Image (cartoon, rainbow, N blue to C red; front, side, top):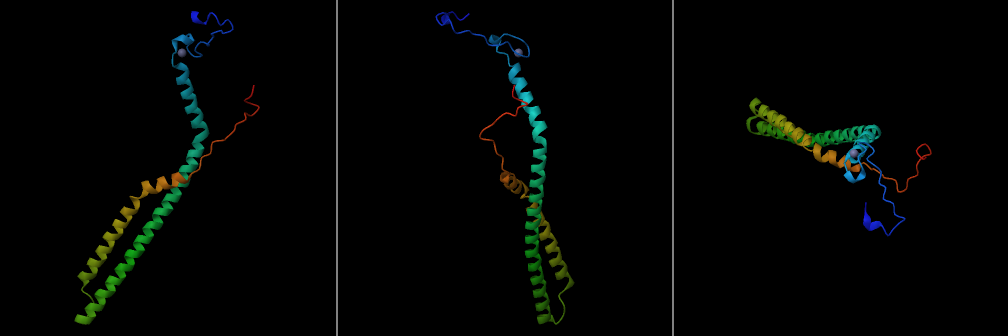
Length: 155
Ligand SMILES: [Zn+2]
């Protein structure tokens, strides 16, 4: 093998056989790469699942609080506008007709308020993707600069 290495007597080519299928290294099978990938996934699942759960719970709670607060602000503004509108209806009804506003007018105002609140809720809920991304973006993950193996892993 490798006759061109003849003049370098100290060089011994000795790549180990595949640890899984025992084929010689020259076969370059992908058992080891696949095995490593599977081991990484298993370790990730074991070690990171609780971290993912914790992050997800935190992000979800903060996103929900944010959306509910946003919705509260929108509806507060809308209810204030509705109150002003009804006051105007009442004032002009008394001014022109010396009577309370027509029930139909009040019903229409009430229905518009209901539609508006439904729209506010829709546009609040539609913000979830953006708000979730924002809170996921606040999570800090740190990779250590240096590592030392604990004695139980050292040989
Ligand atoms: Zn193999």
